[in-house]
Amino acid sequence: MGKYYITTPIYYPSGRLHIGNAYTTVAADTVARFKRIMGYEVFFLTGTDEHGLKIQQKAQQAGKLPKEYVDEIVAGIIELWKVLNISYDKFIRTTDDYHISAVQGIFEKLYNNGDIYISEYEGWYCTPCETFWTKTQLGEKRVCPDCGRSVQHAKEESYFFKMSKYQDRLVEHIENNPDFIQPTTRRNEMISFIKSGLEDLCVSRTTFDWGIKVPFDEKHVVYVWLDALTNYITALGYPDNTDLYQKFWPANVHLVGKDIVRFHTVIWPAILMALEVPLPKQVFAHGWLLLDGGKMSKSRGNVVDPVVLANKYGVDAVRYYILREIAFGADGNFSNELMINRINSDLANDLGNLLSRTVAMVIKYFDGHISGGDEQTEFDDSLKNIALETDEISSEQIDKLLLSGALESIWKFISRTNKYIDETTPWVLAKDEKLHPRLQQVLYNLCESIRLIAAYIQPFMPQTCEEIHKQLGTDDTDRCWNNYGVYNVIKGETLFPRIDLEKELKELENLTV
Ligand code: MSP
Image (tube, rainbow, N blue to C red; front, side):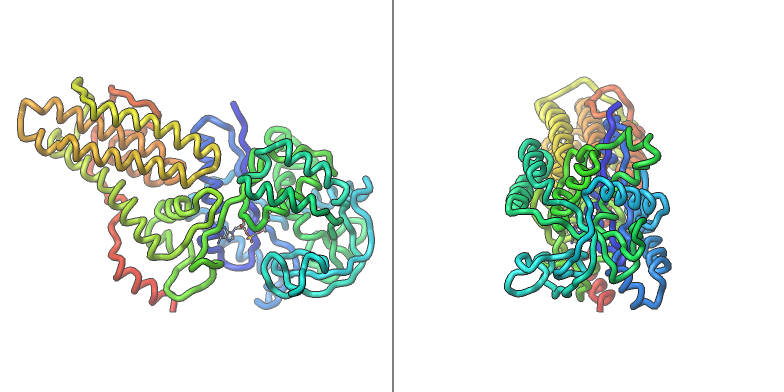
């Protein structure tokens, strides 16, 4: 059996996560579910990145000890993943004991091998990004090149990682392995970034203490990104308990947002090279969900809390919306209005109506029981062909992590199935006894199409697949078009009730004033 190891970034527990944050994890969950369906042994890792100055300051503001502060927020994050049906195999916290001792071991190993050395740091630090910058990197405005905020001058004794030593090997690896960084635009950006020259990286701090202590020099704490990135191997038991590590490393894919590509494709592989550990097969950078073209934040009229949205519209509506809205390599737009429009058109109209019309007709004309007949026409062939083609296209797209493209192709099949109803006009066939064998065939084909649609959307929308199964009276997720089964359908809940846009927007406005 094939093995598949997929990771999300580990989240900062610095406040409630918003719908944009949920994107990475919902996307990884969908891929993990798909791979399991395809028979892979999957290890899906997520977790929280709990150290660093930013968290220490947040805790102070809240009048709490850092650990007390993160414990509460992490509980909320775990609850959020439950609400969103995230099927992770392990949740790592960087405050876990095994991770702390593994990071200390890694730091010591790098030091003993001469890849970490002590020196003095003088430069600028961006606290929100937890990143050091040199004067040249800051540019004329003297602000953080990543987030545009002001930076603080820092001068202190620090440990440095010899990143410059790995510059040529990194470029060679990226150039020789076209899939290592995807999409290609990010790959090109990283190649030119590395070629412009890598400086050694400051990997310890002495000005705050909320972090993992350098084992042989306890006034230093380990740089939070070094601590965080190693989670991908410490979660597997590296370096001491190597069963999972042997089984799943190197990771098939680190799924990350476009803002943290540099950490994952420059710093992380250089650390792995220094540790003589193989590199992950791929780092895939997705775009962002933007609010009014900018970063997600609280805004009047828009609810961005995924728990509130899932409670209002159902978890699968949230999952569908975010996966559909971010197209490959690009950013997507978030607004409650866009989301409600999509729920009404794609989910309530296209998918929900298809199921409810079909179930109603099978009940009305065949008492709820239907099996395949013999008579076939050209409509049937074209339906069957698109059904099987959709399997091929959508599977290929998921394999390439093009989730929005996969959904698009499944929705084309849903539209084609709706069109099949218009073409075959079952209500006309029902009027003439002689046409009943044909009516039976048509309704059977509709059930068969819907059964396949449920199988295709299962990794994206697991609950909806279950509900469709209930109404169709089958839980068969086989991806073949077979003409043998019997469907015993029952009328069930409306999959996605239509939402009154005007009324709903007013209600949301009241929630966010
Ligand atoms: N702690 C680091 C990651 C360390 S991984 C070794 C971090 N955490 S984060 O909480 O700030 O971000 C987590 C993920 O959420 C990142 O992949 C980031 O790109 C993603 N997103 C944050 N806002 C987003 C949107 N508005 N839209 C899509 N993804 C977004 O970075």
